[in-house]
Length: 285
Ligand code: MN
Image 1: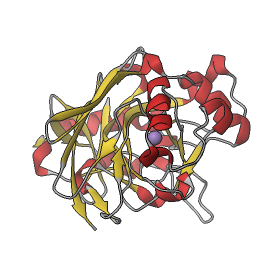
Image 2: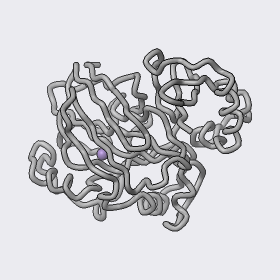
Image 3: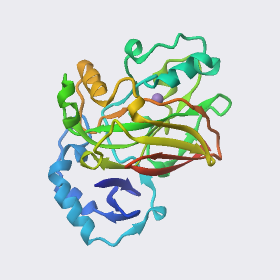
Image 4: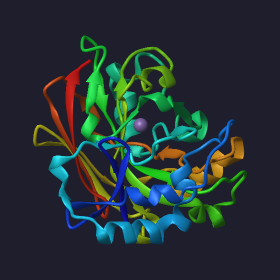
């Protein structure tokens, strides 16, 4: 199932490039009381709600994707976890380009571990990227994003895939400069997730997916998730060895070589095999 969120907090199922409204199924979510648990309530209840979502979609009149504003398919992640330098060739380019490394020693993921992006930086494809520092270099990074489906702590590699609700395209937009990664990558709208979440049952081999990103039609990055240094089970095992993963937590798995600048007026199109195309407009904030 391709599950999307759009317009004013509606959810829909995407079938053959059209959206079927399934918002009626949200009425089945259990009520929340303060303090609400960490994580995304819809993702946490997705297995139970899925028949209701499909049934609601069956009854609705489809709309064209172009007629709606796509939001992040995850509304309330407790964490956006991201992997630095998790493709060998990106490591090489980061070491070679002073505009990327800014004099800091580039470590491998084995040494650097993971970092967090602010949840307030998260937007969907239809909301676009709003540049805050147009005088500085701002780069695109396209990544396979993993959405965690249930709470887990110290998850062993062998069970890691059981914790995945689905997959989406992630854009980890980055201001280059000397500051900490978590600051430079947490600007409002600098984490794009979408265009929808494809449930895990529809992605048989997440470790072997072609993907690419174009800017104004020019291919900038093109790779396959088989080149990940820390693969998806290892990322989940490693992340959960430090912190509890909650339903709706997002793991941006890292970007391959070819990162490059974007600016207001650009049109970014990212694609991942089995997920689809995501078009994102860039503007000044
Ligand atoms: Mn990244």
